[in-house]
Image (cartoon, helix red, strand yellow):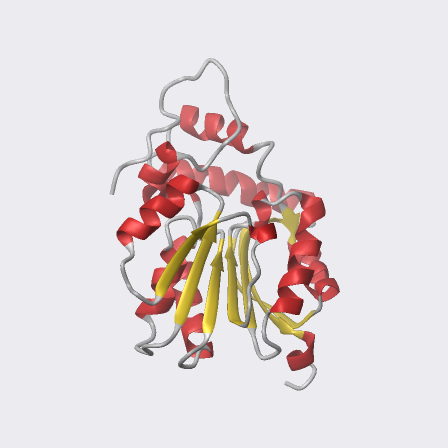
Length: 244
């Protein structure tokens, strides 16, 4: 695993963060040192998704990056006819995912999430993706996913969140930064990466996530994971949630 040193040298101009070839080369190290609970969220996401699938079912890993969630799902099921489609709009990520994951049950597609239909989806996963989608496009995306997935489907959404109470949010935020330093990032790296993410990563509160999921047509919404300012939710199309 290559070590993330992208922001280790002082840059004269901080550009917006992009999932380009440089990021793809160090992404596993970057995300493990940057997202508290990542190494819990991904395998348990895979476990929950796999338990919800039967032979012949379709799962979608939207914003799949290098396909960690796709792999986690496939590792948790021996079903031969399960099909997992990983979709991401970053060519460098999809290229590496195709090289690293050769399970014939996996397929990787380079496309914008807003342009892809999730036909007959039994499971849809959005792990750390909505925060990079334009705020005004988040509800329409979830509404479309709800109408396209199966009525007995399962949605899993993981995100960075902000606490509704400013003092609590500041405490979690500063603890997160300290955690990154404890993982070997320098003050310069922490500062420069934060600047690069300011315009591309816009974070919602837990309450907004839950309200938006309900408005999009999902029910039985629950937060199953929380670590400081990172959380994961599960939800089901309302047609099923009303009968559970």
